[in-house]
Length: 290
Image (tube, one colour):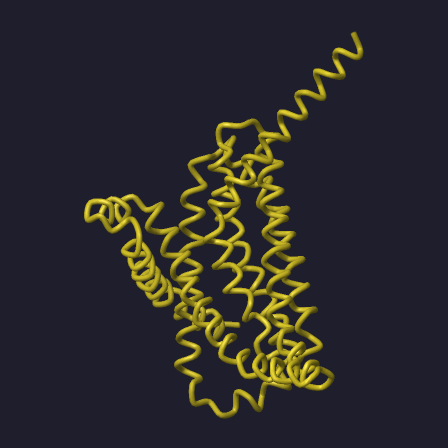
C-alpha cells in the first residue's frame, strides 16, 4: 500500500513537472519580446562607468532584478487569487512610468546636449551617478519584470497554484540570468578588443581593432533602442489594457503588425509627455520646499 502511494505521488510529481516544462516553454516564447526590450534597456546602464566598475554595476542590478522577482511572483499570485481586477491598472501605471522615463531621458539629452561642464563634473559625481543609475535600472527592471511575470501568469492561468509558482519562478530566474549574462558580455567586449590588440596575433589585433571601433557605435545604438523600448513597452501596456484606446486601434485594424508598434510608440510618447507635464512641475515645487 505504501509503495502504491509512493508511485502515485511520483506520478503526480512527474505530471506537474511535465506541465511546468511545457508552460515554461510557452511563457518564454510569449515574454521574448519584453526580454529583448529589457536587454536593450540594461545594456547601456554602465555607459560612463570606469572599466573596473562595469561588472559590479551589472551584478548590483542583477541582484536587484532577482529581488524584484522575489517580490513580484508572490504578489502576482496573491493578486490573481484575491484581487485580479488590480492587475490591469497596475500594469498601466507601470507603463505610464516607463513612458515618463523615456520622455525625461529625451529631455535630459536635449537640455544637456551642449553642456560642456557635464563631462568635467562626472568624476566628482561618480559615486552618486553610479548609485542613481543602479537604482533607476532596478526600478525600470521592476516594471519590465512585472510585465514578464503577468504574461507568464496569463499562460498558466488555468493551472494550479503550484504550477503557476514554478513556471513564474523559472521564467523570472532564467530571464534574469539570460539578460544580465548578455549585458555582462556586451559591456566587456571592449576589454576583449584591447586584450586582443595587446596580446593577440596579427589577425587577433585586427579583430580587436574592429571591436574597439564598433563598440561606441553599438552602445549608442543600444541607447537609442533602449529609449524606444521604453515607449514601445510602456505604450503597449497602455494600448493593450486601456479599453477605449484598444477598441479604437482594433476598429481601425491598427492592433497588429507594424501598425501596432507605431501605435504603441505614439501612445508611449504622448503618455510620457502628459505625465512629464504633470509630474516635473510638482517635483520642482516639492524640491524647492525642501
